[in-house]
Length: 328
Ligand code: TXA
Ligand code: MG
Image (cartoon, rainbow, N blue to C red; front, side, top):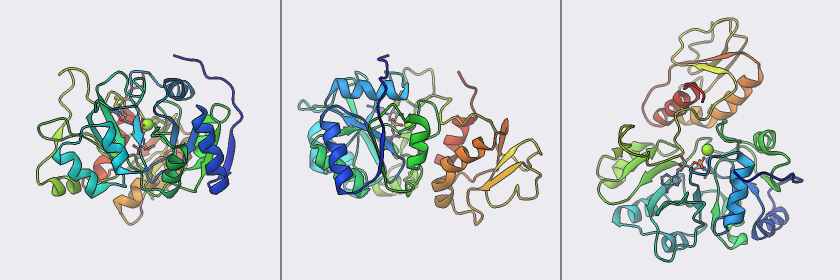
């Protein structure tokens, strides 16, 4: 893995001046943390192997884990990959927005082979965030961007989260306040046959299936060859503390990640409720920030209340299961 050189990280409100300066840095091969509607992303020029290599180095990310290419315009995206009818339909229905489409690369594809981890497919997304789109437009190239956290850690939903993980390792952090959705994009592969759900995320599976009029296929069971989304390691999104799932009570030693107040009467040393009114969209928006805050409370274990599996609950439970998995 390439080593990460020490950088001076400038943190600034995302305005016209900082966006222009950050875009110039991107054209010169630099690293910029940008706000999107899902989580903050760590962006670099997706067409440059050297720029993409420094993303992996700054995050400490395994290089077999490919990156999403971000576009400001649907037609730009459609030049880089081959969109079948269903992929086109999904892009028209959900872009700009928190849907990532995996499609075969086009013969004209300019995205760095390193960003694709050598695959002949590409993950593409058009963010629904004015700052992200202005930055991509000003940079004049697609931007490769994983979540702007150290590899294996909780995704950042504020500029302060990014700074806590990456200060001194990247060039810019553009601050546009908390990410509105707080959960990563849903990833759907359109590679012929039935489209496949690779990662549950900020658009509920039900909405995608309603748009397509078919049920999405799931990741093949492990053991059936390489995983389609190589980044979906079992242990991921990990806070420092261990996680105990589906908790109906929390002890004095534990911190409590509550939902709908079921842990309110427990003697936990700290308690944060994802949504006292049991609203799953609100819970998704709070998930990563609450995990970070409870981690900072210093408990060895975080007890997490049960979350219903419907709507965005599926993606929340996916992240919690990964956070609870044994660490490598
Ligand atoms: O909301 C999001 O998607 C955020 C923001 C910044 O856009 N990005 C994000 O990126 O979550 P990252 O790198 O944390 O997750 C990207 C996932 C990884 O699991 C990776 O393995 C998968 O996308 N992926 C990328 N390219 C792929 C491909 N060609 N085939 C299958 N999976 C792919
Ligand atoms: Mg990530």
